[in-house]
Image (cartoon, rainbow, N blue to C red):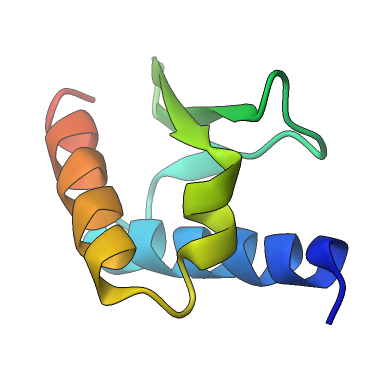
Length: 82
């Protein structure tokens, strides 16, 4: 599988985690990373937060439970401030 497909899988998993935590949050994930980082926008109503996720974390997200746990915790903290 090429890296682009893996990245799409990671983005889908990220969206699933957000939806499980709060289905009303809108997520915008850039198509490409900047210096191996994705600046992801999370919006709920009129509130918006940005989080930075490393490209490797997105690639590993579908398979690695440790990365899933770390990402879920980050999202819980971030969504709690929206």
